[in-house]
Image (cartoon, rainbow over all chains, first blue to last red; front, top):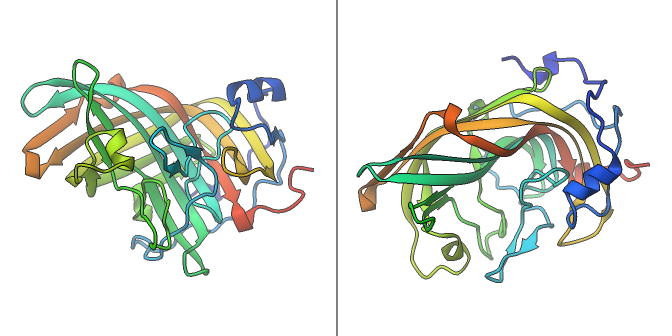
Length: 140
Length: 161
């Protein structure tokens, strides 16, 4: 699997989704969101992290999110079409979101089920020191 | 990463926590630095993977305890591989309004909606607890996407025009 720099830009979207469909899927979270299909405006040259060490300068959270039932603000959006995927702000890079369910076995043989919302973010970001860094992060 | 017992009760909640003030990254949601080599992505092929091995995190036991911590979390060690593949839709998204807390907030992205599967394991040494998921092929993808995103200072005014 090579770097995505090696890949051509994707120009043809094979499944168009109307704005109405889009807003319907993401109601309440994306009222200010529009889609631009087939645009190259979102394809800047992007620098990935170039070292193997984990990032040493922390990023800052996205300003958005939701108020949890317990009071504090959760600075992320639940997985769904149209959400902001990144959990860090001042970020420019590649992201992945995975909401997965399944089952497994505990050490004592008990069958358990699981659910997860895990993500990755790789690219450049402005750290808490105000400087631009490159790095990789995971939401666990 | 939530584990539920046969009755559906959440009994483990694995995450690194949320930094609190005066930490300069206060509010950062369950997000930790990883090695770049943990991620492989090929947007042309619509595939990606995230692999972590023996990664130290915390067990907060349940979601409420994440936010109102009455039971101190304990160390947990997780390993997992998530793989993204397939292609169900491609989307360009521009959020051009600074609309605040409960909405998206000035970001743009090009995303591929697809499918994700996972195989993972965890141990909680202080509790003598271990868990290993069934093979990845048995997991169910509820939502998955990969793509490019930029937000904050990297979001350009007029991008949605």
